[in-house]
Image 1 (cartoon, one colour):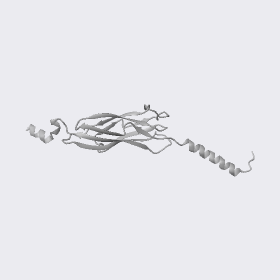
Image 2 (cartoon, one colour):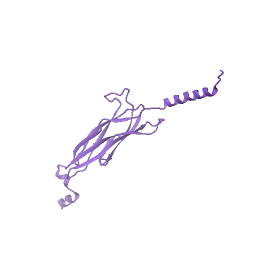
Image 3 (cartoon, helix red, strand yellow):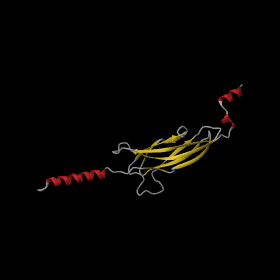
Image 4 (cartoon, helix red, strand yellow):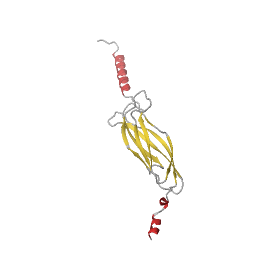
Length: 167
């Protein structure tokens, strides 16, 4: 094989190799959830459960972690806290096929007056362990929680009240 312009051939060969490598490292990443904003009302000291659907809009499995943030962080529990979710088949369509339903349990403190708490539940996804990709992607559901006064007399009693009753 006799090439008159070896320098040009090497340049074209290098360009082809770079293009092949570049096309093999691109991947789509994305996370979605079923409710972007929630406005809730719960009686203080009572428990409310709800579900949140989280799904993977990317092209590779994602390790997802959910957590409550803001004023809600102290009395919101998310189960499971983390999972691996497979990507949705393309083209993306409803209903969601590979999503994960998370159980959200809200247990606000008892109160004698109406209080409003705000925060969010964030879903942070990163490529599955062992992947060649780094970084993360996230989405959050905003929550506005109105906690109303407890209707039970017992919720207003403090340890001091119990001590007086015993005496």
